[in-house]
Length: 504
Image (cartoon, rainbow, N blue to C red; front, side, top):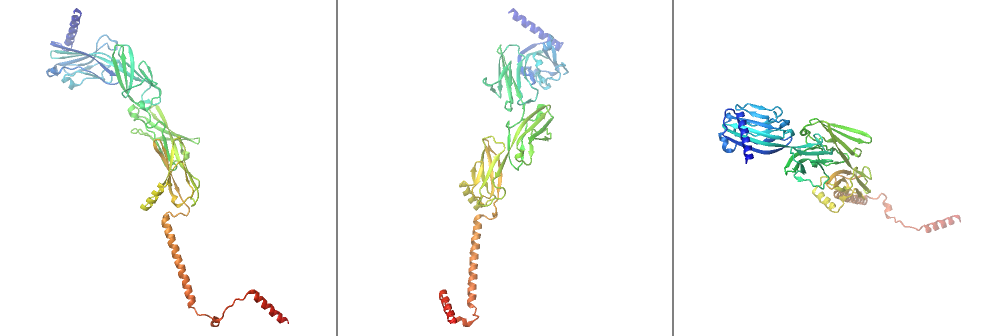
């Protein structure tokens, strides 16, 4: 009991001396003292609370109030260090090391809130803080212990994907560290995953874009004190798949993507440049993309591509003094016919659909596209599709005998597990084909022309017969003559007998 009484007596004497130091000449009628612990992460802001109880705020007279914030044991000093002082006239004094980082709000002071705000917090700010507020005849004392948790990165900002990263977590608590736990987006990391922990550190060999987001470290000490801090990890990389492939038809345009995960300005870097390169047949092609600070996309546009343009392209983006790159593969879809140019009707035609950079799981589909069909044509085309002639699977399309119904556009589509990847079209032209008239209409015209020619020929024959019957004979005496057919042998016998009679 004697020891407790002695401690209370010394505390009261110290507070009375402090009150006389703040407001000389004023008597202290009541003393309030509070003490608690506040944790903050280095780089964030911290608020050290100190305020009057609601019942005493109405008696506060701001013109007779003074406030003093002290720090005990800071920077290895034994004497308390003045952090912020507000006199009865409102004049403020601040310590030089913390001058731009400590503030109190005037509106809060008039309502009885004397909290001290520190922004940003440094690891050296950890320690014991005390507020002494004198108003009228009362003295308010607040004692707070500020603890600082520090989360540091092994590589400078911005953090680049695929580069080794070490997240370290420690605090100003003086007890022995017993356990360290890491949480990513609220989920505790399982111990079975290949993560390395060393003195509160978390190691990532190849950080990916999926590792970005909220990270929280939780430290447990031997005195059962648990300290945690949250850090929002931003990884500068590329959005989208890690190995993108762009599929384009031969003869068409292609756009190769190159998009950063976030604007470089959010990482404190304003100098951004992009550079594309492609090695084709031993020649290096290069493109420079103009800088655009308001955009994080740097695509490469190729107006016309062919099989020779296929291959791997590299996009290199420089952010400040750091350069990150990503490879983009251009795959070109082509159609190779067995007969070049126009195809004769009745010929055998093979169409081969090929891909320059296959991954092994692609599948091909051929389809005959109709151009602006009418209602009747649409019905015929639908019946043909149902027969399976206009929709075929596989990279090779075989037409045993080319006919006019095969004329038009054939499309080869390439599909993968993620859906349709790309397509290429081939226009089939047939020698002597009538593009404007369908086969049914052409047969009707041919039949009508044949029938008309037949009737015309019959009319001509009949007219000639009538004309011949109406014409009179030229030699009337010959009309009564009858032609008799004599066999050849009898004619020769009579001629022989006549010759013998002549010789005699």
